[in-house]
Amino acid sequence: MNRPAGEKPAEGGKAARWGAWIGLRYLRARKGDRFVGFISVIAMAGIALGVAVLITVLSVMNGFERDLSRRILDIVAHATLEGIDGRIAGWRDVSERTSHAAGVVAVAPYVEGRAMLVAGERSAAVDLRAVLPESERRVSALESHVSGRGFDELAPGGWRILLG
Image (cartoon, rainbow, N blue to C red):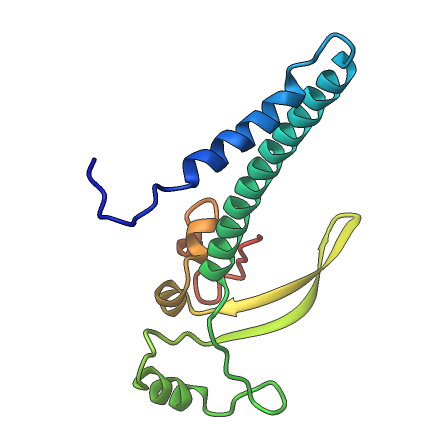
């Protein structure tokens, strides 16, 4: 290969050879230094194993975090409007106005509260959320996380609930 006059050859090759020579010098043991070679091999194996475990754990955690956030965003609203005392008087008007605002895809009203479920001798405190099924289908994927017929189980005045 022809180089212009005055240009020096790349030094990267020499540095790589010196680094490899120094690294291999401690792997190859002389007669009296076998212990140093053994310790070097154990140390490099430990570092390699540690890096492999770290990469595996980070990959699993990233996948878990992505899946968890996707599932949460499927059922939790991106924005919620509440009145000062928790209620909105004239919620139908507010729903109509906000559904036409820029960037709003859909609007669904709900009522939230706490209750006690009792079955025989057992009881449990629960958070209740009453929804209008036809509106809720437009804003969340909650129905896909419910077994059975989903929102089709609910009927006005039917006193049915979906447990989750």
